[in-house]
Each structure stands twice: as C-alpha cells, then as structure tokens.
Image (tube, one colour):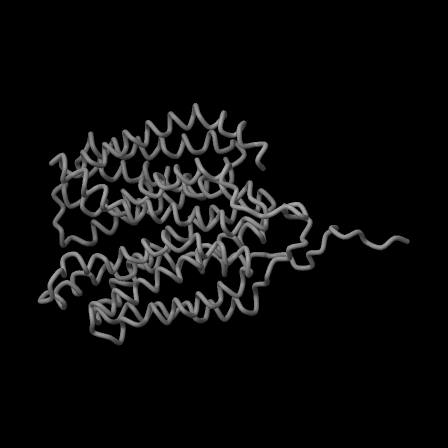
Length: 409
C-alpha cells in the first residue's frame, strides 16, 4: 500500500451557503460606506455651512472612501498573497466599524473627512479579501459564477436598502446613520468562527509551479484593468445621475418618493442582470462584455433621445440590466485565469480599477456638461455612444487578445 502523494487533495473543508453569505455581507460594507449617508448630506451642508469650502468638502465625505479603495486595494492584494486572507479580513472589519462610527460622536468636518479616509482604507482590504475568498472557496466554474453574480446582486440591492435605512435613521439627526457601521462587528465575529485560511496545497485549485516566482500576471491583466476602469465609470453613471435625470423631467426635487422609486427600479434591473449572468456565463467574455456595454449604450441613448420621464425609466432599466451583467463579467475575466498565489494581487488591482472608475464618474460627467454646456441627458447620451464604441471594439478585439494571452495562463 503506497502513501498518498504530495499534491493530492488536501482540502478537508468545503464552503457552503453560510460562508458565501458572510462573504457577500462583507462585500456590502464598501457599498454601505458610499451610500448610507447620502440622505443626510443636506443636513451636513447646513450644519457646517459657515465653514469655508463646505460645498466641496461635504460631497467628499461620500467620495473619499472610493478614492481610498482605488489607491490602496493593490496594497491589500499584496498582503493577501503574502500574509494570508482571513486575518486581514477580520482586522479590516473591526477597524471599519470603528472608523465608520467616529462621525457619530464628533462634530468636526475635518475629523469626519479623516475618518472617512480610514473607512476607505479598510474597505479596500474588505473588498479585496472577500472577492478573493469567494474564488478560493468556490473555484469550480459554476459555483464561482453563481457567487460572483450574487455578489453583484447583494451589493446592488444593498445599496438601495442602505439609502432607505440612511434616510429613515437620518430623521433623528445627521449623527445617527454613522452608528450603523457597527453592524460590521457581529459579521466579523461570525467570520472568525466560520471562515478559514485556504490551503496553499489544495490541488483542486490552480497554483504557481514549485520554484517559479509568483508575480502579478500583467500580460493577462492589462486589457481587463483598462476596460474595468471604463466599466466602473459606466456602471455608476446611472446610479449617480438618475435622481437628477428624473428631476430634469419636471418631477419636483422634493418628490423623493418618485425619485426613489425610479432608483429602486433601476437597482432591481441591475440585480436581474446579475441573476442572468450564471445562466449565460458559458458564452464567454467575448460575448458577455459586448452585450453588457451594448445594453448600457442603448439605455443611455434612450435617456438622451427620449428624455421625458418614461424615457428615463426605460433607459435606466435597460442600462441597469446591462450593468448587472457587466460587473461579474469583468471580475470573472480577471479572476478565472489567476492562480492561488497571485489571486490577491490580481483582485486588488481589479478592485482599484473599478473604484477608480466610480470615483471619476461625477468628475467626468461634470467635465462633459461644463465643457460643452450640454444638459445632463446629452452628457449621458455621449457616455452611451462611447459605451457602444467600446462594445464594438471588444466584440472584434477580444478573440485576438484571448489568443495572445492564452499562453500566459
């Protein structure tokens, strides 16, 4: 009787729905950091209105975390690959809860901005580790696709829920919503007992051969990261601008019920697109990305050409559905070809690219409307035309790119 050979299956634990639930909950923390406090921004502007630069600094309370994620996610990826996944996630979750609740008990705009920068720093680690662990735990293609699509569903629906919660709790004052960040603590405690560090000897996963140095696989990441920056931008255009588009159709700015309803419908369309992804994932990136960008293009052009209320609603639904397919498609494009020892850095760079696109969205839309003097629907239509061009380029270019990079995997 021979002894088992080194390299045979060494994994004794198999992740299930509970581990997936915790990782999806963790993935929602960066989204909560972005949208939870948006309903109380007017209160913050009024409270700090006598301070210089309030018009710029108060919106930065929302924008700074996304910028910090973009800047620091690659560093988080380095830590993930070199020091491990689980410990970084647990520390980041507790630190996120602490930094997130700081504005609940201080009354300083500068202090709030500093705490928000730290929130973004810890979000970079949380998002990078959660995504990496989803692929580590569920690296079989059908399970990976299912949970990466559910990550989009959870974060999209979570964004809508957090806006509602933030608005309801914000009626007690602008300090109140910041206490909700403490929800990360019980999630972190559950993670301590339910998650584990993946084995570097798990033969069911893909690994860098013994003796080969693990490097960031730039050859296969270059194009996906460039496309992801643009995808992060198009993904957030409708999310950020839909309320202004609805108000531009004649709906009163204080008619939050109507504006919120349209935003919720668009959010549900994004979730529906993400639910579709596992069923069409086998068609491959060369089909999915042109399809996703094409749907975004159609939706945004509809908003431009039919800029009445009905046009905005229909356009938001179509673009949102495309966005739901886009996000897991972009992520799968990157992580499906990475090996265990390089996966954290690849995921970190992808996270950085996507959130850089998010951070740039209001800046680019403002630049388009400011430079051209065009109304917002025209600017959205211009983004839609660009998305259509990108869809066409990807449809023709991905076949060649995959052929060139196939030898790098």
